[in-house]
Image (cartoon, rainbow, N blue to C red; front, side, top):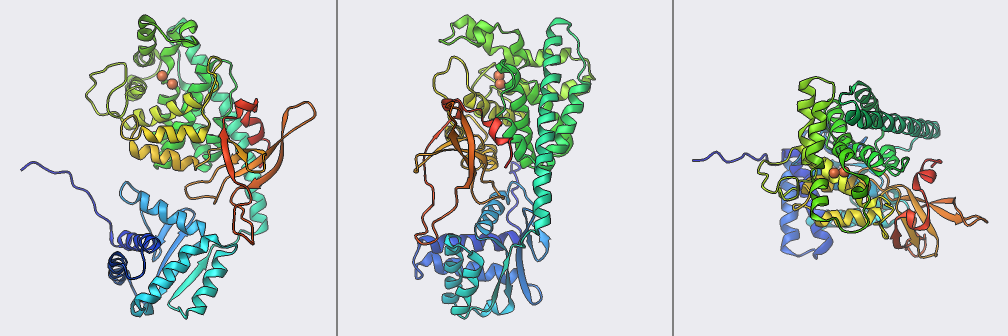
Length: 484
Ligand SMILES: [Fe+2]
Ligand SMILES: [Fe+2]
């Protein structure tokens, strides 16, 4: 019999988390007496009983990691969605965790359901934890304790802010250095034939160190457009975005470094494509298209010319070659490509398309806002893009990526300067864009788009439309990096 691939199922703790999360979802859509709810409760009881050790069972989030009984759940292909969903659920309710006592095993189905419903509605409240504690008291539910996220001391907040501005400074410097070193390589590789890449590697190494600490500032810096030359700006942005994806799937620093180099050089072959083709506003003819479509193959060829070890070159050749091959292996340069794409090839193709469709180009009249670009790319999941990586990419940015321009129901325009994150803040922060007397947009007040009216519970500001900032002549990086 052929060897079937072995898939790991949930571990004991993951199973408990899964039955808990499923029950929350089921109670949200079904009435108390529905058979799925009853089945969900008994699954919850069973998994709970198997995890219970000693007097209590504690589930907690700390620094974006999930812990059950102080054991950290590992973040992998199997558990990833579950952990992300649960972390988002806890964060939305300002919960650090829940502590179930032994008495939970004796709780009635009605009490379990009452607890689930209270928990589910807590995110609508001004103070979710206080609401939960009062609700549990009123219903005499004493077998579960609500753990509130610890408040950061004021000093800590200040040092975080200081750290943030320092990290922005690193990001800016890294961006300048990486751009300069790439430009040097790209220019020399065609004229002199052989150029080393030691400097590029060093810059990428620094960048990896900084990016591991704070990747949000890096995904934001990819909105910078420092060169008139699209290929340079684009290559740097694709390197940054690819490394951010790599960080979110927990690649090692060494792998992130290699991914960054592959991504930086993915369009190296475009150096050989004449500008009249690269910037042609209309449709390309067959010969022009052929020349353009050869660029990924040429990127790999030019990499072989770099002055570095054979081993290093061999390790970075394939992903640039693959970056226009789609997940279903259509695309170019070869239509009959049979080998599955490398992980780096799949990552780079996502970063590549995103940057391409959100970049202002002289010949393009309309430009996609970052949130629409994500929606458009999600439609291509499983066809054009690796479906898991595309979800990681979208989670990384949040619904409204940094740099999206929003039109609010108040008629104001607001620029997203810090997005809602997979495990971070609850909602995007945006700054209101106000016109000065010269008609130029300047940064006004910063608002949290999750803010709700205390009386009605409605959002204070509704988003009614999204745009790419360039539609209004706004350069997002100018405002994003001026401080938040
Ligand atoms: Fe390309
Ligand atoms: Fe590209």
